[in-house]
Length: 349
Ligand SMILES: [Zn+2]
Ligand SMILES: [Zn+2]
Image (tube, rainbow, N blue to C red):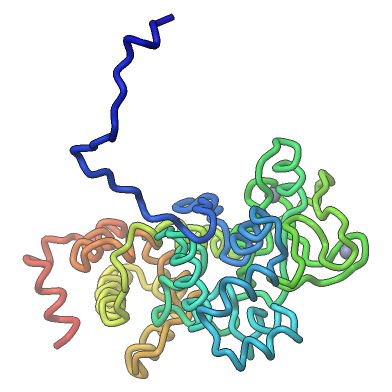
């Protein structure tokens, strides 16, 4: 024990190096689950989990913190008498919270400024705004895998809702090989993407847990599996793409793919016949192209499948390298094209 009399007493403390205190976020710096993976959390799930972390309902969080940033005073007072699903409901007539409409963008910007996170845009489909047609892409009500909920509960993990479950064409859980469920097994209610008092994993109406370990095996067909795989890839690849994507760049690539496929299938007319519908759809898209986003399910997925390329390759590869990959896939003799630039010239001549 030092002798207190020997201790020096300072009148003031001088710090020679200035210390910088990082900016504090208004709301928790809550990390979204699974960004960059097929099971990336959805924006509605993140918003609900953020409310849970702050021990308030989604409505309280929205009205107290988010509404002042994205709504006029008049609309805020109207909102007090309505429920939040009126604002963020999923239907063709209303903005889909996990989609790519203006309200999703406003909500994302508001949440990013409140949490100081920069990765929240990947929780919705904003990356694909203006590229993929939104109409008919999303469910109007929630769907979930009861076995995922049960597994996360048993493993003491956060219960959340992956963005993948928001898509109408995803009916199957690849982890449990079971069918997604869209009605509460206790009260048969359909649930909105977000409601005033949503709690993840529980029914909004009867408040019971939505998970269970009962296996409901579904024999998913090839189209279902292919749709899930491509949509999973879109979600996974989004954070690694240069933003914003340009529709013109995609159209240029599609034209090169079209040309490469024509060359490839001219050598085997049987295969060309199978490809017919997609080729026709692609031709219509070129002739009618007036900056309208493309149909994911009817055009982009079949085209990637036929060309034997992944969505990641479609969006990330240089156009001419992409053509080369397709020609290689079909073992077309590339010596025919002395220079790949020649393909581009032929496409647009
Ligand atoms: Zn599952
Ligand atoms: Zn219920």
